Image (cartoon, rainbow, N blue to C red; front, top):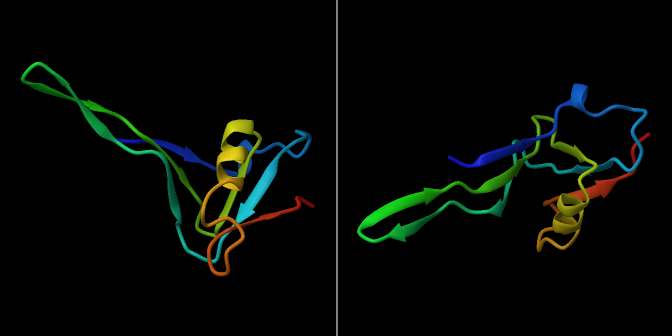
Length: 90
């Protein structure tokens, strides 16, 4: 199973600065940061758990993690029509 990076409204504090919000019209969009894969240790396959970003039901993902922000800004779907984009927090 992969590690979920999920944005929850109650987790994002309004007093916290440097929070970046991304929006999408796609319901429950999932973007893989690092996919699951297997490593071989002799004849045994060992699963290595990946990592992904889940946008919420409203199409919103908020984070202050600089690595995730940079990853999303460099993603091939960033600012494409119908995919996802960055918005300014009110």
